[in-house]
Amino acid sequence: MASAEGLHAARSRGRNTRQLVHEVLRSRIVGLELEPGSAVSENDLAAELGVSRTPVRESLILLADEGLVDIYPQMGTFVSRIRERDVASAQFIREALECAALREAVGKATARDVAELRVLLTAQEEADRQSDMEGFFQLDEEFHARLMAASGHASAWPVVSQAKAQLDRARRLSLPLTQQMSLLIGQHREVVDLLEQGDLDRADASLRSHLRLVFSDVEKIRAKHPELFSDEDTPPQAPPRQHPPHRLAGRRLTRPSRARP
Image (tube, rainbow, N blue to C red; front, side, top):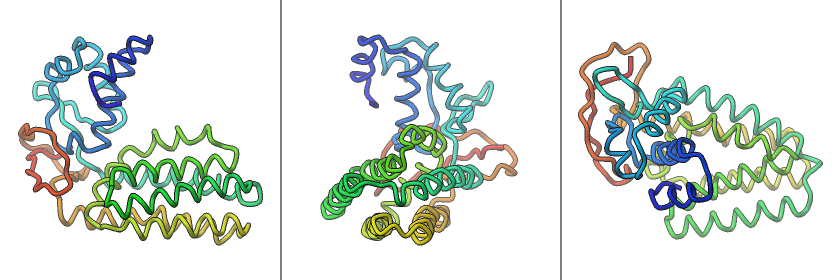
């Protein structure tokens, strides 16, 4: 849910306004509607979403805690640039939980579990044929969540999802750059095949290799768009200029001038 209409509909059902605003903003940041380094205006967001500034301000504080925005007193709030250290930490959490779940799933997964995973693989192949990167990304999320559910630990997926926001931004950037949907689908299929065969060690190794692909992707993205990344040791300079949010794929990005301290 990333629209004011959806937010108002959810509010009418009694959901907390701050939580809803947080979900909208987080979705826009992770989905790259708000690009790394872009300025964020409390007033503009409040007006667009039809809420007061208070839930927007509180949501931005929560997003700062997640490392998704940087708040500079007297200067403003900006979508954080991607920090490779955060990507590595998110990958560590994701790999630890997903691989632990997969090892439990081997020997426990039912024929129905495998069939549902293969249905998702078929949908991913269709997304690839249609060059539907956004659709593929959503199906990729469903695949990994379903894979974890096969272990009996479906409730652990929200923990993974919450932890990997920085990782997801890198993954969304990498997909249009690397054009590797077919490679990822092939890796998914290998994991499912090994799960079905009950080959615990090879399934674990296959999933780890698949999840670690993001590291080579980050190197490619940073080489092409260094302005989207920051190093924590970089000293502060002038604040970034504000520019309108837009989808990154197929666009030439402007270089924000402030790096995160």
